[in-house]
Amino acid sequence: DVVMTQSPLSLPVTPGQPASISCRSSQSLVYSDGNTYLNWFHQRPGQSPRRLIYKVSNRDSGVPDRFSGSGSGTDFTLKIIRVEAEDVGVYYCMQGTHWPWTFGQGTKVEIK
Amino acid sequence: QVQVAESGGGVVQPGRSLRLSCAASGFTFSRFPMHWVRQAPGKGLEWVAVTSHDENNKYYADSVKGRFTISRDNSKNTLYLQMNSLRAEDTAVYFCARDDFGGVDVWGQGTTVTVSS
Image (tube, rainbow over all chains, first blue to last red):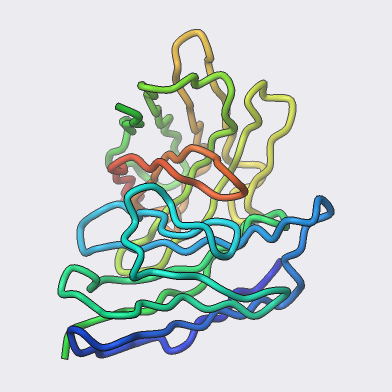
């Protein structure tokens, strides 16, 4: 199985400041069709996950443009250019290239 | 409004069975592969199973293979997860989710399964 490794696992942030989460996969996530199926999700306490980013860098509808995704191959990053209080929660990366799909361990973002 | 809603969770003894359902609305259910994802208490997300739109292709996590069966009824816009030989480690919130762009874009609120004697 593809192992997804996130860092850091805990991220205290100051509102208005940037934040960055890394996600590394144990194998390349480039699929045979040329796409890279790397997703980012945000889960607030007690809520269902919400997808923010698909195929590395595409924002889902309604996702604020302060969120951006980047990367290639096995190395990916989620960036928040200016953190807001509502951004607290756990962020997960997930690969949809290889079966079984696998998630990272999650990064808990909290306000300092 | 595009949405999915899970049901069927509950408390069940180890070794017993349970069937979860997921009712979809607001989109053409029969066109989309569908997934089950679970989350054990205080833990991260674990992908469980997927079925193609026509049930011709199904994949399972190793942890549930041979015990869980995913299925769907496109005439009823409903996804199912038949869970047999349940174990304590299957205790989790089970989410139904719609496949989109090599990921999942629509999630339900989840249904809780507790396996305990």
